[in-house]
Length: 418
Image 1 (spheres, rainbow, N blue to C red):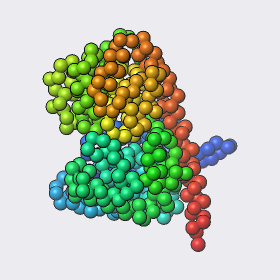
Image 2: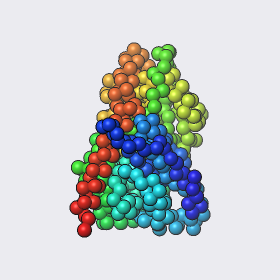
Image 3: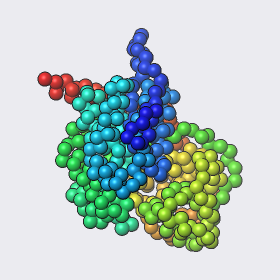
Image 4: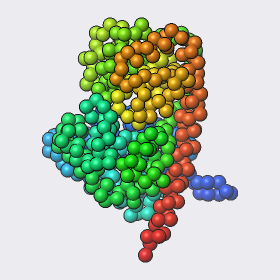
């Protein structure tokens, strides 16, 4: 554990690397870089799960995790905003880790605000390959979700990112929006995404299409979902009602979900927290449980007839879908972005028009009126999980991406050598 300018950085060793002998392939040396979120979310959990999966697969992994604990005062926020495009202390920490560990590849997840996309050029200069997972759309959108005024918005995909300042897209702050828009603009103009990153990982084909539209090189983008350790399908016991698990924010479709509770015969249960928490309290036919730990969520999923993801925004890859499928629970999703591709209509769940309480209520009623159909969809979802989202299947897709990046960097380094 090292301290970095008032914020905690975890720099932890994984398994030791071994030599290539008798035709065996040595483990890759992977440095995972991630700026944790101030409020722990799904991306933080995904990064930790991925690190653990790689280590269990025998790879040599170290992590450099920065957090935002040191960003408290107005002066702290102003400095972080100004440095977001090129965060010198964060980049220096990455280079220190590269020199100490000598990785084959550096895998970046969230780099805002304490690391910045500038890390890719710095690592490139050392001859080390880099991979960037695109968990959200922040390479082109200040708020990262391509949404404004409760609807999808792609104004900045093909246009100036500074439009976000006028609309205060980042947390309702024009100053914060300016900082993120400047970061997007600086790295778009510098060619960071077209020159300095060897491979990108997008979570879905839909997400890849939006990144290509934003100018990222499509030939370097690979599709790899997030993995999930197998919790076991569990007993096929009695189930009841519909379950929502997630952030209680407007982009998640919480308001139409609450309206749907009054229009369905299916009891609705909500787990989570967020700015719309007061909206879900004291609603007939709706039980609000507040936040729950992983085991509590898993138990609730096993008891539900279906899980609902009523989002109004383009989601990346909601892990709640993988979690529901892993325990044999079907999922009802909004027909928006990648969601209908992740959940097969009538196969692993149901679709509903985004923002439509009546459509949600009809889907809920169908689930409770046809419990055997719901069970069959749940079993099909478990099959999808076993094929696509287990640790083994996801790691098997990650390792070739790393090797591609390493080969591409070696080839480029040779061409650039004097």
